[in-house]
Image (tube, rainbow, N blue to C red; front, side, top):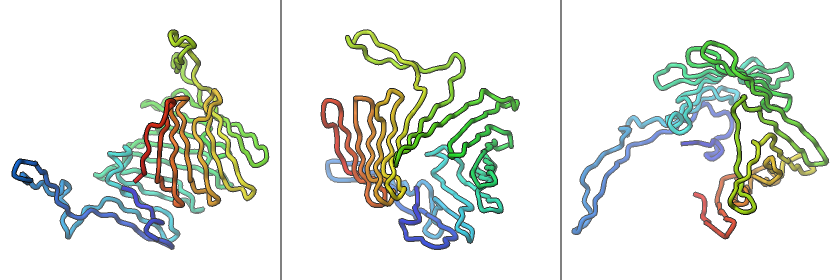
Length: 287
C-alpha cells in the first residue's frame, strides 16, 4: 500500500500521515443447485476491530518537512526491506543516517551517508543489524556510483567493483556511456543468437557499455530519455511533457516485442499495449 501526499492535497508542513485498515468480513461461497450458500465466515485475518483499526502505513515529519520515520507492514513481504525506517540528518539538513528495524524492534540494517563540503554525496556505508560493515559505495561528481567495496564475514575486502561513466554534450543533447564493472575471473555471460541458417547458434561476448541520450528543451527541461544496448539498438525511450512529467514510455525486447505505455498529466499509467514481431498482441487500460 502506497500513499502519495499530493494525491490527498496534503500541502504545507505535514507532521504525520497514518493509513489504517478497518474491519471487514471475508466469506467463502459455494454454488449449489438451489442457490448460493455461505459455509463459513472467516472474518478479517488481521483481526482489527472498529475501535482499533490495523495500522498499515505511517509517516512522520519534522517541522521542516523532512521525513523522520516510515512504517509499512507490506514492505518486508513485497520489497524484502525493513518494516520501519528511521531517518537522521546532519546540521546542514542532509540525510546522514537511515536505520531499518524489524517488527520486534531489532535493527535489521543501517546506512550512513557522507557528503563533501559542497554538499554532494560522496560515500555510503552499509552495516548489518549487528554493526558489521557490509559495503562501501563511492559516488562521482555526477551523483552516479563510482565504486563498490563489499566485505565478507571476516571483514576482508571482496573484489572491488568499479563503475565508470563518460559524458558528451552537443547542443541540447547529453550522451552518457556507462561501463559496468568487469566480472570476476572465470565468471561471465555468453549470449547465443540465431545464425543465418537457424541451425548453429552464434555467440557474442557480454555487454561492456550502455549508452543513454538525454534531450532537453531550450529551458533546460528534460523531454526525452533513450537507453541503448551495447550493440546500438534502442532498448527504452521515455517522453516527458513541459513539466518533466513522464507521458509515454516504449520498451523494446530486441526484435521480438515493443511495449508502449501512456501516462496522464500526473504521471500515472493509464494504458499499455504490446506488439509482437508478427502482429498485435494485446491492448488494455491500466487501472
